[in-house]
Image (tube, rainbow, N blue to C red; front, top):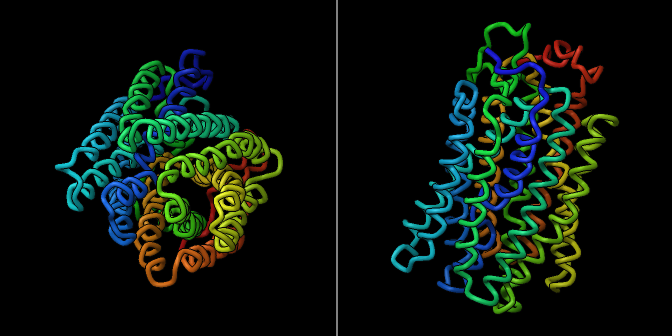
Length: 421
């Protein structure tokens, strides 16, 4: 039974959700591309070894994502899951700085544990948000979530870069603990009674007993095509920033952490207004034109990276990441909500989609490292850009527009009455 039907959360819960998105910005992605710099500069790992280590987190997320979605569809302890996951990420990040654990098996294990934790964080926040505001207001609120998420990324990147440059690169990992504590406090600020757990899984009063099985989800043709879009996008995108970090390191090892921070900050600063814009335009323009803008920015970015390894050029091109990822982070969860509204299986769908894009991301980091070893960094960027061209084509032809006929989802039945494979 729903805990509330008004979808008007208290100011305390709204502030808690803002804070959760801000602090989880650092926690959700773990150490991210800084891991490659750390392993390269401190321990002289090869590009292939770094690729294996970084892909471990995304492969673990891939395997855990669907079970996480199933659990979120049935549990009322969403806040507790977020709290436990943030603690695991913080502990693993600190252990990776200890000399005894800086070897391939240990780093892979820690990355895998962080990946399992990350599998719960994004869908849990999406579920809590949907349960707090309802489907009608979800696009607007999801845009706000991403604004705070990107703001958190800016602050965490600046903090991590400064600590690494002026103290030591190990402080990149310690900074994660601060954000984990902020995440714990924020999720406890959200009031349990402000979360409608039926709405959090896309269930409505007219919903018949939901079939949340993976088979039922994957039989939906448009959801399958959305999943393929996510695989292609993340395969093209995931390895780009780590490769840029390594590319910059070749030119100036001492300033690599500052350059990487600058790359992240530039992209995130662009993402803040883009996310705000995308959440609103998805309601007025529709999902399709907004999503296409984000998808097309990715291959252009990859092609431009290959032009030069000049730090200033790479930093300028990085602004395109703000457009692509800024739109993507808002739109894919909105489109998933459109396609599952009234079914009661939103979270398991997000889990399945998360598994698919984690597959793309893990494969990207794993393959790109060896492509670079064989053809150089320019060849690696062009290889990724080529796959990025396919994502908007698949989305345009296979998914199309998903916005309901009216803001109240009166046409939800029409949206969800879609062909099955």
